Each structure stands twice: as structure tokens, then as C-alpha cells.
Length: 160
Image 1 (cartoon, rainbow, N blue to C red):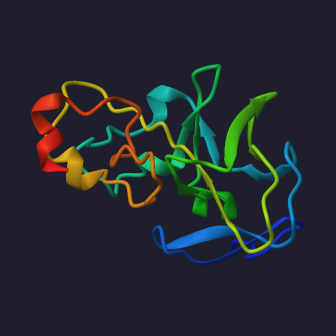
Image 2: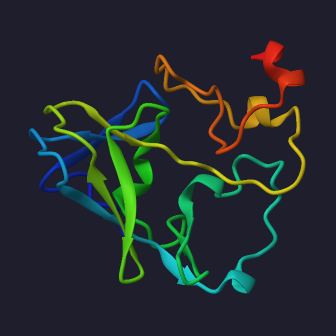
């Protein structure tokens, strides 16, 4: 099934951050729910083993729900999967009744890219290659330089 390319508050186009992105079709008020993040709902044990060293292995399109189940936008997802990461987001995700939504953290002007902080979690010890595989391109003044929700170990700081 094709993915819709526009909704009440958003449309999809090429992004300067990464690939395609979601953009404000109109001014969006603070607190407005913009889009539901959809995908295949599955139990945690149904997910095939994901190689955390492979940045193309769906890491940025899978949400873990409060009940432990997973939501995989790579399977049956909608345009919400095109919302890019930013270390200075104008949106956030929230869960309500087992569903994920993206909402505005502040008033967003028409034409602005809609971004949220992925807070990406990977298990195990920090790996040097993650600096490249999960590099952040948001260009925010407070950019962490990585999509992960963890600090970069001091021994790697000089590499970024």
C-alpha cells in the first residue's frame, strides 16, 4: 500500500537533514497531535535478531511500547517514519493506549521540518564505529553528534 505524502499538518519532501522528511503544511500550534506513527505490532520475541552494527537494520523505525511490544514502521508504516531526528526537536513522541503519536513541542511555522529526538538505544558497550553508523546530521547548536541516547565516552570525543 502506498504511503500518503500529505496530511492535515504535514507533507513529505526531501530533507537537508537526511533522506525524506516531514514538513509543516501549515502553522502548527504547540501541543497539536500531528500524526500517528504506525507499523506492524509484534511481541519482542517475534523480532528477528537485529545486528546493532548494521545501521540499516530498522533501528530508527522500531518503537518499543510501554507493554514491551514493538511497533515496526518498516512493515505497514506510514509517513511518520520520515520524521527525522534532531538534538533540538520541535516535536516529541508519546504513547496513548498502545499507539504512538508525534506532537508539537512548540508552535511550528509552515514549511519547517518536523523533527524529534530519537533517543536511540543500543545495548552493550559503546563501539567506535557507532560514531559513523549513527552519526547525527541535525546541525543543531547543541548537537550530540550521534543518534544514541547515551553520552559518547570521553576517549572518543576527539573523533567527532
